[in-house]
Length: 259
Ligand SMILES: Nc1ncnc2c1ncn2[C@@H]1O[C@H](COP(=O)(O)OP(=O)(O)OP(=O)(O)O)[C@@H](O)[C@H]1O
Ligand SMILES: [Mg+2]
Image (cartoon, rainbow, N blue to C red; front, top):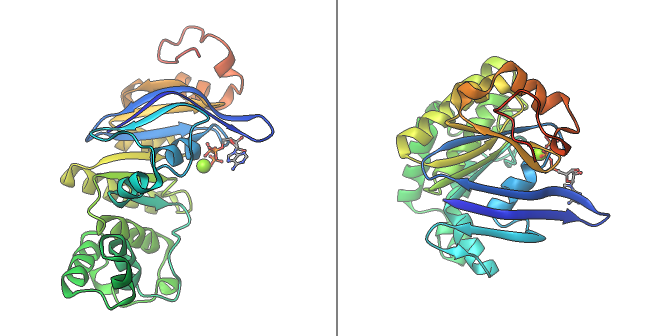
């Protein structure tokens, strides 16, 4: 789906957010990104939708190759559903109107100013039904709970008819039980619709529960890439508690990749 080849992202001041990352996001896979704060997860997600350009290396999209222009990235983004931690919904708008925002990109430019066609409204209602919010379609989102808002965010991504979902800490602001429910919902939809997903999380347990594949970053490098069952306690400790992990060879833990 997406291939990063030896990608480096450097910000002014010399911060290397990503440092020689090579990674292929396999079509149909639900891949979870783990790593300490500042390890480069959001930067990696932003590379995958062209909101961040690599300082070195390449990002290629299956069937399209290396995208050169903003117009090509826009086309890619139309088929990419984004889900964020902080909802990014319009608080005074209803769940339905927020969901409909996802379909605006598919309509001709000025048609975005007109009331949406019946067919789009039906698709949005259907998406809200899939996330369990059929009865809240006409409720303003500032009257919804955090978990419900996050479901609206997922519904909005679904009406784009995406082939790819990029989710940056989609359940970070939710209590543990709700986080589990919302992530299971997203996971179930991706499986049902055969979507490819790259999802950053801070909860290792949720990664174990939902991921086909787990990729962990430390200081901008991939330090683990494996199945959720390879994610042992030692490996997890390595990912989170050894800040200089990327600088040395792992000792006695074959699941960790020395960078
Ligand atoms: N626009 C920017 N300008 C300068 N430095 C940046 C910028 N964006 C990110 N960084 C730096 O790049 C590094 C990686 O940031 P990134 O946001 O990718 O981390 P993250 O893994 O998503 O962290 P978190 O778990 O806290 O969201 C950090 O050191 C961060 O300060
Ligand atoms: Mg982040």
